[in-house]
Image (cartoon, rainbow, N blue to C red; front, side):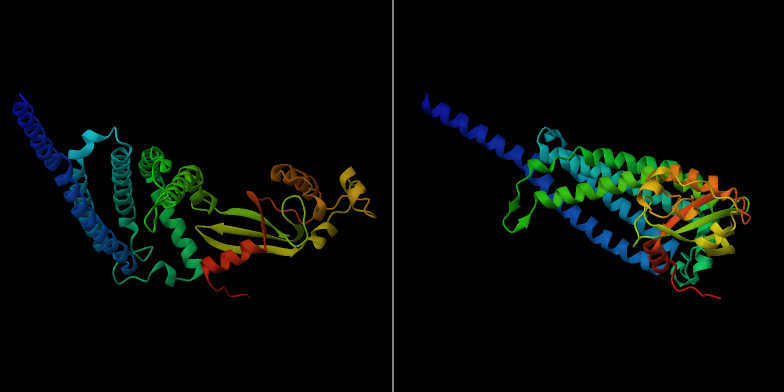
Length: 341
């Protein structure tokens, strides 16, 4: 009787080992091998971006996609164990990656017809090598054509975000040896979710940008420069203003002056509101330079416009923009050196 039990136990153990080999060990070894191939291909793909060659990028992306599909196929044999969180996370991660690759391929197909415009064609001047004005015009011409295809790309990124959201970093140990695991997974997840949210939420602005930058007709904008070193409700004291016109990304300054000169064009300033009378001693009239009273930018703009319409220098505009010195510094960083005449 005992001999039969021992024999039965050995048979069960043998079957368990066989099943473990075919359904656990062998798939994991295969996944690891395919993952290493994908990682190497990803590094290769990253290096291609610097070559400004859309055809080569398209080819490498297709190659990367094929290798990624092989990784997905290698992982499917262990999906039966998705009740285990780590396996479930692997599945969600691979699904997210698949959506991102799809978004990447759609992006390449979208920009391919305009690759020469943005310097993403072999032999063409790269986008960064162009002048700041040319870069802005190029962006407008390209965006105007590309925005129609933003929706499917945004949808893919959103779907990837949903899969990543299912991953719970708290199920992982803080460390495995010297490898920090939980915090790294948390950081990667947070960064990805932030990127996804930014792209999806920015979609309406992306669609509107060509129109804002004058792709269909000339636009006129009023810029208010705020001195962020002298605090006011919207970010700084209004010191300077400019009116510029833009058409297809080509910008022309129509008028610019300090805010005191603009105030001087108003012959009849109204009485200052209670906030000014209370906190700005010696000022009894309401000036444009003091109009940004509310942290609600829309409300401050309404106060500004109430005074601006009285100005002899009034210009009809399509939009009003407030910026501080940091934005100017950032713009120079993006667009490079500019010529001042």
